[in-house]
Image (cartoon, rainbow, N blue to C red; front, side):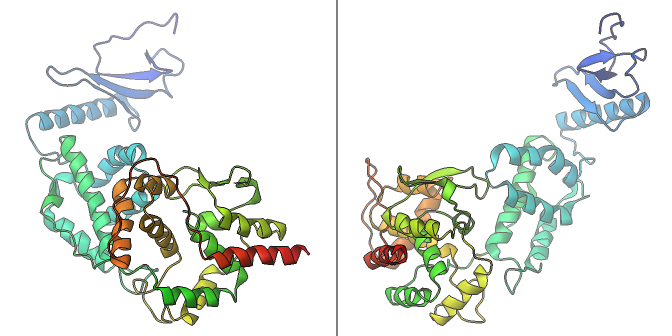
Amino acid sequence: MPGWPKCDITMAVYKRFNSKRITSRHPAYSKARWWVYKRIKGQKPIHQVIPEARTREEAELAERHLVRALFDRAYGIADTTTTFEDFVESTYRKYVEQNNVNKGAKRLYIRLLLDHFKDKPMSSITPQDCRDCRSKLQIRANKRSKGGLSASSINRIMSTASKIFGLACEEGILDRNPMQYVKALREPPPRKRLLTASQKEVLWKELETDPLLYRLVVLAVNLPLRRGQLLALDEKVIDFENERVWVIHSKGRPPRLVPINATVTSVLLPMIAERQLPFPIKDFRKRWHAVLIRAGINKPDGTRAENYHFHDLRSYFASELIRRNTNPLVVQNLFAHSDMSITNIYRLRAKDQYGRLPSPRFQNVSCTLVQLRRNTTRSAVSNSQSQGN
């Protein structure tokens, strides 16, 4: 600021306002924040804000702590001041925002880990502490299933803990990752997600008693969308001329365009005419579960691992595309898989269900979406014509 004397650049702590150093003569000195700037030979300069400091003495105390922490890292002395919560808030949350797609899941895992490690210094956390955290998660109540958290869920949470400790090693706060000595829980084999031919026939017959749910299932096996995206479909996002639909974001991934086939068009057109978009379903779980019980697919008292879920229709669609030798890259793009390894899971499921599959072709292949039962299309078209008459 013109007219104000320049600060001595050798001072370690100073106040800063509008990106400029200021002195006590500046009118904004009282509301400016303290900063630390310290150059140490052979090390990166310390240059950061101290928002909690209210006086010069507090800022100088923070400076001494920062210098001591730098010294400890340089000479391999354990950091006993940084707690698990401090590191998560200062470093790992930034890492999640910059690198992870499904940020919501990571925030949940962070909350669960903070319940156990919150105030513990990073250097004091041992492999046994990690095992205790895992045991605590195993007995944690779970609203979605009768037992506690599943082994796969616990492994994902502990994998997040391992990543946090790994970043701490990179930052020089830890010299070893305590999770490297903790074994993952044994996960049960994946449940059977594909229905047999007889189960499909019975399911379609039961769905005919609920026309709205019937249409939703037809769309589910012809569009690579999740339930929430299907229920949110609206006339404004459908482009029949170019045969595509704009779907909302899901699992942290941005909105995207998805192609539609003739079966989807034959279902959506009468729904638009009847003003049934978005889907007017308020009791989806109750209706879906009742249909599966009447079809003999689910048991009334079946567990979450035993029952067939609506999301399994998405697995059926992906497996059917792979069974029909669709380019795996096309399948990955359609389903917005972050990695090809996820797409390969559906290939293995289809192989277990249908036996030997043809080798995937990676040349330019046009993706033909599943045409679910020709009579489904014919009946939907005939119904729309009869209602129009």
